[in-house]
Structures are given as structure tokens and as C-alpha cells.
Image (cartoon, rainbow, N blue to C red; front, top):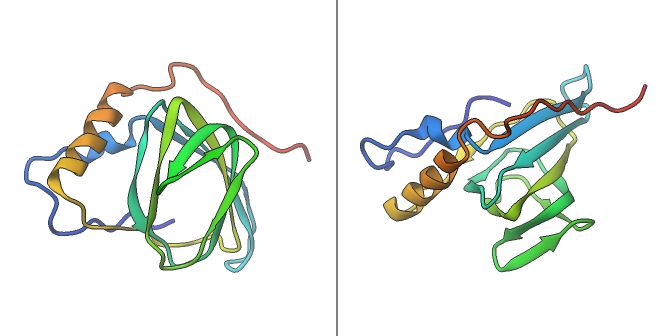
Length: 145
């Protein structure tokens, strides 16, 4: 993944580095070919908000634990959803956090963050700051060979 592209209208003084707090991404598998598959394990802190964004490739998600809210839908553990390329989306983890598997038929993709109201940006940063340093344990995820 390339570095995220942020919109120009982000409120002045907002600490975007804080957004990284509350999420851990482990790439479990990445094919050697650019058009090969990739699989990532994404762990989200309680109530973590993934900003609305889009990618240039399709992505299939599987909620492994906890639940998330995608638009007006709650997707529980064992559920999944597909996001087509160039379609903006974002989601929020439930109060216990969530773990989501992300499948792509690509090993490289972009991430374009959508413009949002100042209040939404502030909420995203505030929630992420509550989980700075999360998790306070080390965990690695790997598939058996």
C-alpha cells in the first residue's frame, strides 16, 4: 500500500499521526507478483473509526471477532462484505474492538481519504488518542506453512 492521500481540507492543527493509534495491521500473506493476492489481519481498538476512504482495487473483508458498523449495517463476527474499487467506505469497531481479515487480488494499492466535516475528523482523532499504545501486548499472526 502506498502512503494514504489526505484531502486538502483537513482542519488546521489536527494531529493526523494520532489516527494510527488503535489499529494494528499484520500482513499475513503477500504474493511475489504485483497482480497476486494479499491477506492482512486488522485489529481495531474499541470504537476505533476507520476514516472514509477508497482504493483502486476490490477488497473482500471477513469479520473474525467482535463487530463493526459499516454505514447503517452492523456486521458481526462471521460476516463479511465486499468493497469495489473506487467506492468510498469507512467503518467503526464495536465497543469490544474487532478483528477483520482483508483479502485483495493485488499486492499494491492506493488509499485516498475522503473529505469529511471538521467534527468527524476530531472524533476520529479523539477515539484514536484514547487507544494510543494499544494493544499493550505483542501478538503476531501467521498461517501455517
